[in-house]
Length: 112
Image (tube, rainbow, N blue to C red):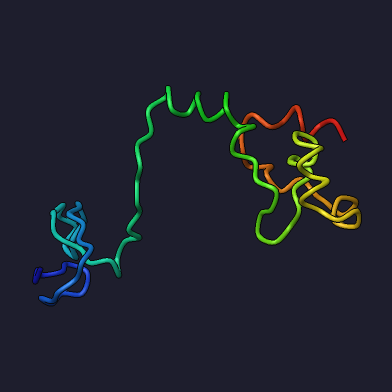
């Protein structure tokens, strides 16, 4: 879509446009379109509260044995029999808490 950009002061194509208020050189308040060079486009995903609560409640179900090439200590604590089949002894000793950002796993991570 070709639009006149208030930031660039020229008409050009862009795939991210934002209509926002600004103050011109004379100090007057105006509105206009700005291309992505003048604002940071963000992807906003609205998640209902019930889904957030379900993620916390079922956090144990999303723990995987590996994350970014690191063995998971949380997986070893949750599934010791499966961990013996998945990891070597050396990997089990060097495992770290790699799922710290997942809410609901705090009780597993605190018991070292």
